[in-house]
Length: 470
Image (cartoon, rainbow, N blue to C red; front, side, top):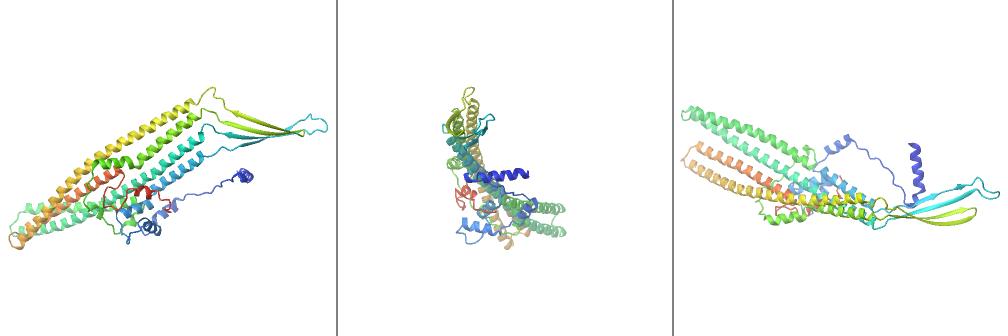
């Protein structure tokens, strides 16, 4: 191996004038160093702050909302690193496709053992082989590689959307879990006061033991529900950190804004969003690019029916005589005319076309299904809002009657419990509506909330940001 390495170095030195040799640089991976680097990640990272200032120059203060957290996920999430590396690989293949074949050099000394006296026994000959590609093969090869490179570039946008989608879903889950935990704590406090009031009535002979028992059972169930809500909140917080590409401790003490989920839901016309998806979804555009690459592959295989040439000028020194020669060689297409590869390329083009058609049909189906789900969830949320408004009015009325001495404290506590129950029901409905909106956005792969500061080309533009250094 040592001798082989030395020989390779000598060979590179000999051919340096023709273009030089690349050298190998080892980059070992250390699981321990990688884990330590991950654990040190934080939303206070200076590089992240510079990135946010560059992308959102109008932001005067740092607010961790859906937009800024999406940018943080773009900065940290390793899924985008994989997509960028695949694009780099595709671009490198474009360079390979455009490479011009190197000429060959042959040296053939001949020794004549029966050379006459006074004559040199050596005959020296050199031959230079110059390959020539015909029928535009190099152009078709480059075109196909460029189309595949474009598809890989669009795959970055698709990966960026997956990151944003996972981040939004995690943020919705955390918002719902936090709100539920707070509402259950409020409900638990009201139910505890109800149990205390019923206990006083029981001692006064104004209430029955079953009434007290039922109230205590309801309180115990609320306590268990509150514990479950706390567990879900903790899990949702870990899920948010995972979506960001950060350790869970990095988001524990951060003040998060959930204002994006408290805004009115957008009104979305179905035909418009369907057309947006069919024109702008990066995976559809990538499928078109791969189909174009299959066209170029077929053209390349058809061009391979025509043989390439190799021109070989030669020079021979023979007993002082200088002899020049010119040879031309080519492969004769006698036994096959590249029918097999042509058939494979034609089949590959059919596969690419079928994949595009299937993807387009699936996208239309996803949009229609999720649009219906979003519409139903929006209507349900409107009903929940009206019920919550009614519960608030009932509580205000109960408080007025209680202040006027027209009702007792238990009736007031009952109205407070009804309001909390309505708020919990409305939270569940709002969560379902936000999840439905997220599913519809995933089908379109564009933000659909007009109030969101995420422009239409945001995912592709910033998902491919090559200036992010992690």
